[in-house]
Image (cartoon, rainbow, N blue to C red):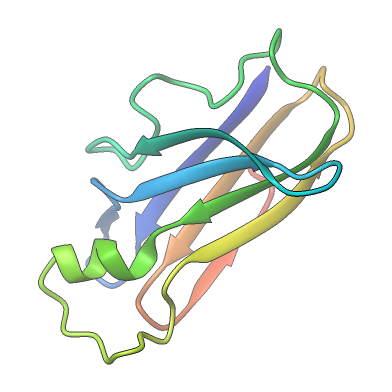
Length: 117
């Protein structure tokens, strides 16, 4: 089933098109960069899942969302330093037969996440 993400910009009420995201494997030692991507018009990875079911491995991961750069790109005046610069979400994959969806709802001042379907 794999791993996916989706980002919604709660300030503007739209998907976070153009936000940069990085995925890291964090299991042992220093985090290992797996891939970088820029979200499409729907706020999702344009290539589909971050991992498909064949690639997904049990372990711990981190998604890093470049929130401040995204909002600055939308013309939002942020203080320096911004309240939220990058949002890092650490999560675990226990059962690779399941789908893990990690959505982010974000504004320049708050965010929430959950395990979606």
